[in-house]
Image 1: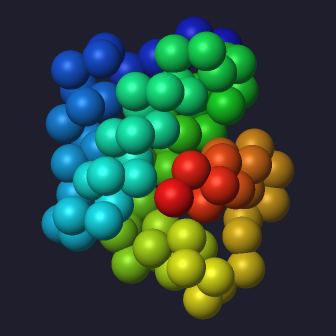
Image 2: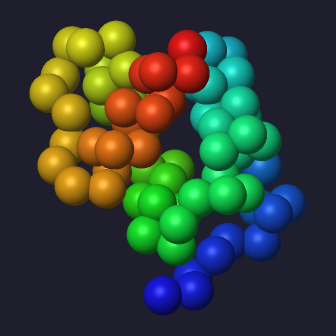
Length: 81
C-alpha cells in the first residue's frame, strides 16, 4: 500500500488549531515517519484526517486509544511527548 501523501501536504496537515498538537504531530513527522512501515505511515495519515479534540483526548488519556495501527501511532505520539 503506497498511498503516501506528499511531504509538503503532510507538513501542512500537521499544522493544527492547537499549538500542542502542532508540536507533537510535527515531531513525529520529523523523527518517526521517515522510517515507519507503510502500515504505520497510512495510520498516521488517517490520524491527520481526524478532528483535533479527538486526537488530543487520546493523547491526554481522556478517551481509550483506538485499536490497531492507529492506536500504535497514538502510543508513539504519547511516548514522544
